[in-house]
Image 1 (cartoon, rainbow, N blue to C red):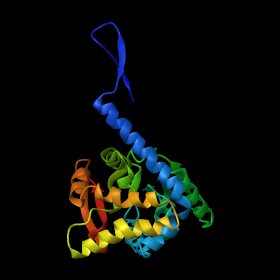
Image 2: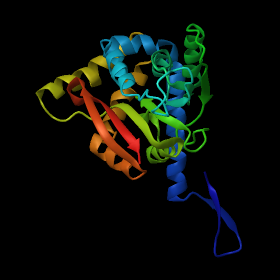
Image 3: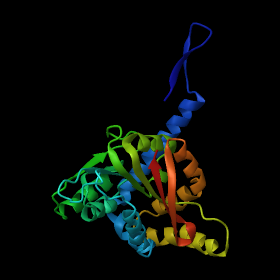
Image 4: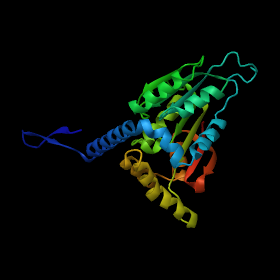
Length: 269
């Protein structure tokens, strides 16, 4: 946003500083991303299954297997008093949080957070079709400003959403704030593919074929954004360094599909 600066003379002029200009640019990019996901929301699940050849189901299943599901009190053996909290950021249409609620036994609080109202509406509709004793709280919010108390979540998940957060470091700081000590952060994300023959084939599919197929069913520009956002994203090692700077210690990594997709686990120290 423009800030007022007083010149050496008595007159005042409006001038945008480099930092405010950058912030304005990031805000505009974030608004465009929100609009994009609102627009493609109704076709999102269908296209994900087709374009990933249903591999996205396998990727999320692996993430679910990494969510800790032991009692908070390790002497407690029964599941009659679940009391853990899961926050799913960039929840999209709710695949992860709904599957987690169905699978986990020691969680009583689930938060599904997204910036796209279109995505959240679909997630809510899915939840209504899957009756369960444990409710899910759906929240329209930014990953950089989570409306959750400090040290309140036992596990925080984010699947294919970190690339879409323009202030990534601020979001990671928020993840650390919200997690309890020893809490787990799980990041499932696409990363730039390293060079090689197989990676060349993957790039051909990812950058050429995928947007073309998607364009038959949905907004083609939205699926051009996907490979573009991946190519500009940081590496796994760089992400590990950023997380470490906010007290999130790297624990494990599982790579899928020629290393184009990775699941990373961090623990708050």
